[in-house]
Image (cartoon, rainbow, N blue to C red):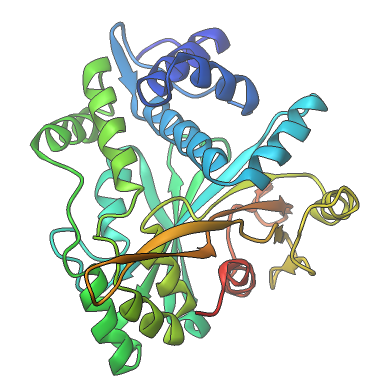
Length: 344
């Protein structure tokens, strides 16, 4: 068994892995910004553990979201100026449970490489009002320290017929971002729990490509038809499988929200509270982004649509286990999804 890593060893490894995606300067910045648990296990000489790869992937995705969401970047800058580290609780993404070309449908497109990195599904959350289902992917090694993934999927076959046709037209030619080299590396870390530095970098580059839009630029008519029946489907049409949001864990989300509102942040009006009362969430409204759409005459047009956003969560201890309640709540998730809704 490998010795427990020192804090500087853990951070140095995660920073080196993140640098292969974001460059050394940004990697150093995000490792200083995020609260990284020194208990994240390492591996032997020249090896990288699945937990280190998972944390580096989350760090790179966090950076990517900040580059796409100015309000999130402003918030993180605010926290850094105050000397407060960011406790990265989870990231969320949306998928299509339907015809997706070469890309596996639904959550399976991500579970296939998250599971070899040490993640397992520990929660299933029906979202009937959204025609969706959410799954919580939790890291088996350090569930409370390595960010979770909340992966939702839109059930296309439950939508109205016009929306199903539009979804087929938009997503039916999706590409698979993972190839033979990525799968060889993923198989190695899934089998052994660690891998070489080179394999880790191959995994991370492939995984980052997965968090993107895998389908062609959508036709405006298809987008509007899908949006009419599913605002969430419309969001996936423009943003693909990008991080929908990243979430900071804070001690008191109500007080945190009030402080941010006073500072001019555009937060949703209410805090969502789970049925057990232990999980409380709110978020800033999604920033707008300019996206291209194809027109019937072969040209293109650009529209402003909702992009990604930033969320805040407080978790209490579960008295039955004595551990932090890491669950989610269907009602909370449905309420949070509303911050990316927009009409055609």
